[in-house]
Image 1 (cartoon, rainbow, N blue to C red):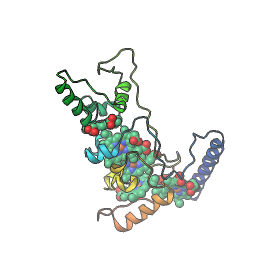
Image 2 (image 1 turned 180 degrees about the horizontal axis):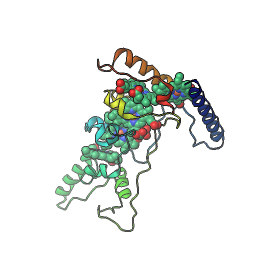
Image 3 (image 1 turned 135 degrees about the vertical axis):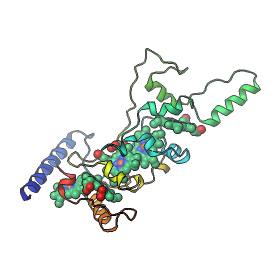
Image 4 (image 1 turned 90 degrees about the horizontal axis):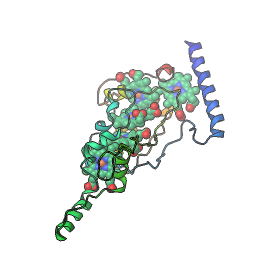
Length: 218
Ligand code: HEC
Ligand code: HEC
Ligand code: HEC
Ligand code: HEC
Ligand code: HEC
């Protein structure tokens, strides 16, 4: 057991020095830790405040993996198209155009907002929402907000199963226009909650959250 812990410790130390070395050459290599408050600008101005807050869409409607796999996952554009096949622009803009068209005695023009147009572009549709063979469908290059170092093992499943809320770890995402890393994701943060959860339970249910090195480092 002792030598196993030592091996873990050594491989982590090697991994860390390699990271420090790499990051000196490439600013895109992230150092572990201290990304609390990180809030990157995303390729589409997608708002959790609007979708998860105002519209009340369930987190797991989009992040289907949280219960079933290690990663919560980022939804493909097809998930957005469930609604954006019909919703091409904010309701008020569409309504204003409809009223103007009645007044001017013509057919209303279809309004496609600049941000929603990026969904259609990614899926390979033209500006009449017909599939355009000259466009190759691609996925949206969302920028990762949370990123643990590779030497840490994290799995959403046991947390969701034990009844830990998304918000306990990610903050009030449903109020955010743009997702921000709320907690520091440090080892102390994980281990303190494991100790606290073992002492006090989660929603009064007893849990057994491991504090062994090998639970989070293999
Ligand atoms: C309609 C789909 C949708 C719903 C509903 C939704 N999300 Fe998201 N979520 C996304 C998309 C798309 C991204 C990637 C873009 C971004 O970061 O904003 C994302 C990103 C995130 C991230 C950051 C991922 C990373 O890169 O680290 C977290 C955390 C998150 N969502 C949590 C939640 C929580 C908690 C809820 C419920 C309160 C929720 N989401 C509801 C679509 C959704
Ligand atoms: C115990 C804390 C915790 C809980 C509870 C939690 N998350 Fe996470 N989440 C994390 C950590 C830590 C990461 C970074 C994982 C990594 O880098 O491997 C993460 C990453 C993510 C990501 C980025 C993509 C991915 O799958 O790694 C999304 C999206 C996300 N969480 C959504 C959610 C949603 C939705 C819920 C609730 C159903 C939730 N999380 C519950 C801690 C948590
Ligand atoms: C359950 C339905 C639903 C889903 C799923 C959905 N949206 Fe929306 N979205 C809406 C509605 C409704 C509005 C318009 C609200 C309004 O009238 O202002 C909207 C508005 C938007 C806007 C703002 C448009 C603007 O010009 O102001 C963007 C951007 C957007 N959605 C992106 C996305 C993306 C990206 C996804 C997939 C990750 C997604 N939506 C999934 C219902 C949905
Ligand atoms: C808010 C509290 C909380 C935080 C923060 C948290 N965990 Fe947990 N963790 C739990 C609970 C509760 C369980 C489930 C215990 C059970 O099923 O009895 C768990 C289970 C686990 C497990 C499964 C092994 C086991 O003990 O059952 C791993 C691995 C794990 N957590 C890693 C992490 C890592 C890595 C982090 C930090 C990035 C983290 N956790 C942050 C509460 C937390
Ligand atoms: C519940 C999960 C968890 C457990 C248990 C755990 N660690 Fe960690 N450990 C982490 C996380 C998360 C990080 C990354 C911290 C960061 O990026 O700032 C980390 C980082 C480290 C580092 C890198 C230096 C540092 O502090 O950032 C070492 C070394 C380490 N752990 C050793 C251990 C040893 C030895 C044990 C057993 C006594 C242990 N860990 C138990 C989650 C855990």
